[in-house]
Image (cartoon, rainbow, N blue to C red; front, top):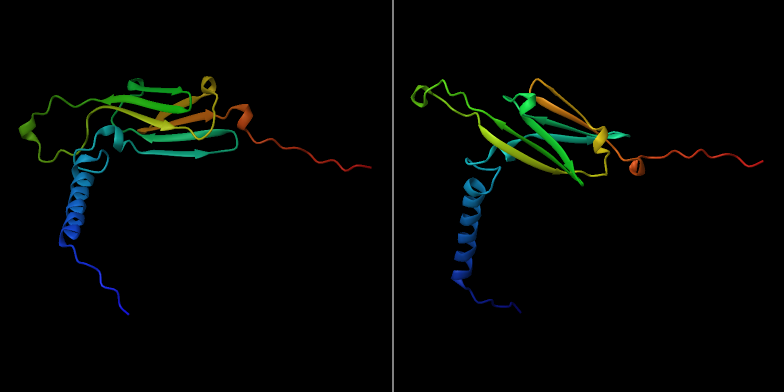
Length: 149
């Protein structure tokens, strides 16, 4: 026999309201996804691992290398800086303005322990490349197997 379920119209309206709230939050409020996204959340970063290091590449166009601050605290990599705006152009002369200006700070958790004192940083064509050597304890060790006579 079929089972009857009581219809409650306000339960469905509530889910519609929640969906609308989520739409507006994702479009305008949540950093990194909307029109008001700060520079820090749009800092594009690639991170990959080699046998002996973690490599981080960050796209930071329009900044001088001396205006970038990179630090490692514990297991967190921090990239800070400020992209300065050109002041010689007046606001009313713009047709389109899409580039972002201002200070940024991006914290990136590191997947393994590193040797911060041996880290290297290069900046070329708007791309910051960091080479963070792994700590000796996390590097893979090869053990030779000897045949017993």
